[in-house]
Image 1 (cartoon, rainbow, N blue to C red):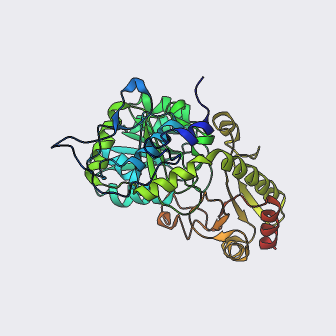
Image 2: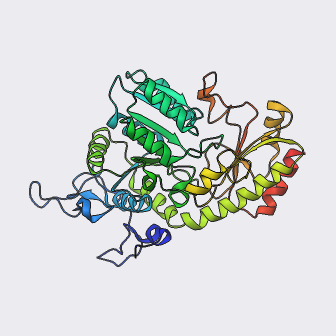
Length: 395
């Protein structure tokens, strides 16, 4: 019987140190490693495809190429997502950039969500477009629209967020995998909002998963990082080469902090989901709220798909207060427990106005978010306290 998620989160890649017996992998704060003769590198292992998820390194020579602490995190992430190989990066955007430059070439076309994360849009529109790539925003919640877009212009990559940031639309991963593969495209899923605890895209047919591990996997707002998890051996080798060549790696202390966060991912996500559901239900009933976005609401357009492919609906709730943008700004300034700040997924609750903050780069584009939209990252505080804070902020 395979190990459960929580068991993998605590043990995958994290065997006790063979010398000291330390139960937590040490921080190997080192840049280089002694060799036993020229080319005689120590440690590491090369795992074949039949061996399952793991580190594919033949030894340690230089920490940009491989570091034991980073390797422990990567082995854990591969196990949690059910992938063959995982790679830890300095940020989520570094992971996205590495992946797209691995699988795409100038002249290639990709599909992105019509409400993609602002940082992803900035990378594609302002960086990769200058490299010769083209893109088309598509509503990923509509598989028929994706099929039409693929038929009109062949794409190398179909890039999906589900749920999306910050409008929380939901895409049917299995349906999009079929559509992408029939058209010869690769399906990439940004699984940051759901986390591997709530959703496992590779099991649903995706080719690659990306994460901002800054968010739920790290979970404590104290480390920035990113990850790629690949289902294919050959793709893993290509990503490994590009990561080593370009060097956007996670440092050992950052990897250690992220690995520490991953241990409690399951129990944290359960509480995030529970609190977020209560927040969403309260906002729906509040007279000063015009619209609420949360997949856990039965009225949400993607509720049934989310219930099918997720084990919970996540910790992010977005809403639009009555009174427009000025009132939204005022609400953000009146909260006490919801700290005004960017990012999400930490134990503490955060509030932000995406149109002016995380998604400002999409202003004036097809991906512009409503100016009065408020995004909440619902933390682990006592739920009643969070509800009271929001009621007070709404007046």
